[in-house]
Length: 300
Length: 268
Image 1: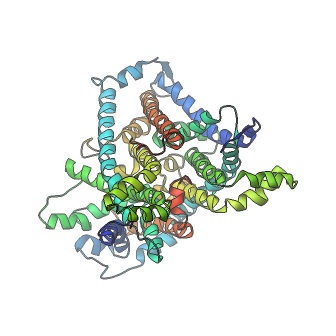
Image 2: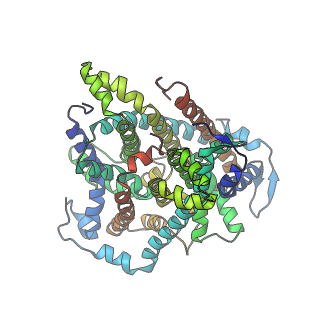
Image 3: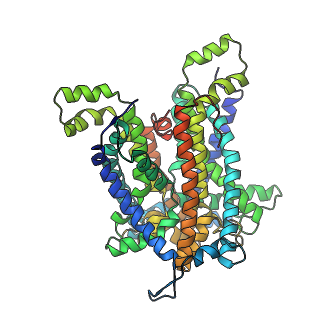
C-alpha cells in the first residue's frame, strides 16, 4: 500500500515518542554517565573514562571474566532452547485440531503458561522439581536417577531448559498456528490433485507460509532468552556455583547487590548494544522479507 | 490433508506436559504443610482451604493483588491511548524519520529490563513517584507501548484507506472519524493489544519489584519474600501462585478467538 507523505503525522506519533523517551532516553543517559565514573559511596563520583569498558572486555580481570562467562552461558542457553522450541513448536502447531470446540480448549491451554508471572513460573518448577515434595524430582529419584537441581550443575541446566521449553514453546506454536491458518484450502486441494506427499506439502506450502511468523518467533525467543532473569533466578538463584548465572542475573548482582554503579552501567551498555545489533538485523530482515523475496526461505 | 500422523497423541502429550506442573501447584495449594512435607500424595488427602483463607484475610497478602492489578490496568490504558494515534500515523503516512522511529520503538521492546532497573530507581525516586503504582505503570510502558503500536499498526493497515477517504468526504473531522469509525473497526485489534499489555505487565517482576518498597508492592514481590523466609510455607506459596494464574486465564478466555492472530502481531 502506498502511503502519502505527511509531516503532520508526527503529531499522531508524538505522545508515544514522549512516553517512551521519558522511560528510555533519560535512564539511558544516567547509565552512560555512570559508566564513565567510579564511586566510593556517599555520592562521591570520580572520572574513570573508558576504564570499566576495558576491564569488561578483558577476561583476565574479575569483571571481564564474570561478564564473558555469563555471556557464554547465555548464548549456549539461547542456542539450546531455540533448537528445541522451534521444531517442537512447529510440530505442535501442525498437530492442532482443525475445527470444533477442541480448538478453543487447545488455544487456551497453550496460552496459559505465557500468562503466568515469571517468578510464579520459577516457583512452579521449583516445587515440581524438588526431590522431596515435587512430582518430577520424586519420580526421577524413585526411578533411580539421582536428580537434584540445587547441587548438580547438569540437573540445574536441565531444569532451567525444560522450564523454558514449558514456558515458551507455546509462543512458537501459536505463531506457527496463525501462519498455518492463513493458508487457503485451495492450496491443499491443488496439492492433493498433484498427489503431493505429506513432506512435500510441508516443504512447499506450509513452511513458506510460516516463514514470516517463524522469523518473528525465532527472534522474539532469542531476545527473551538472552534477557532471561526471573525464572532461573527463582529456581536456581544462578547456582550451583555460577553455573546458571546468565547476563541479566550477573548484571543485577553487580548493580543492585553490590551497588557497583560504574561496572553495572558499563555492562548495561555493552549488553544493550548486543541486543540493539540483533534487533537491527531482525528489523532489516523482516522488512525486506515482506517486500522483495517472499518465497525464499529466511533462516536466522 | 494438512495434519500430521499421530497428531492427537502429540497434542495431548504436549498439553499434559503443560498442565502437569500447574496441576501440581494447585494440588499443593489444597494441602496442609504437614501433608506436603511428610507424604507424597498425588491429590490432597485432607483437602484444606486454610492457605487461601490466610491470603484473603491478611492485608499484606491480598493488597499485593490489588497493587498488581492497579498498575497493570493503568499501564494498559496509557499504552493503548498513546499507541492508537501512533499506529494510525505509522500505517497511513510517511514522514521524516518514520522508519528510524519505528526501529527505535522496537529496540525498546527488546531492551533488557535489568539494564533499566537501576536508572528507573533513580529517576522515579527523583520525581517522587517511587513506591506508587504510577512508577511501575510508566516503567512498563517502555516495552508495552512499542508492542501496542506494533500490533495496532498491523490491524489499522487491514482497514482499507477508502474508508478514511469516504469519511472525510462526508465531513467527519479527524477526531470524530477516529472515535466513531476507526476504533469500532479495529475493536478486536484493540482487544488483542490490551491483552498483550495486560500480559506483559502482569508477568514482569524485576522492574515492579525494584520500583516499589512498601505501599505498592506487587503480589509477585510479596511471594519472593516468602520464598526466602526461613521455614518454607509451601502450601501458602502454592496458593498465592494459583491466584496469580487466575486473572491471566480469565483474560485468555475472552480473547481466545484472536489469540493466534495477536501473537503474530496482526501480521499474518
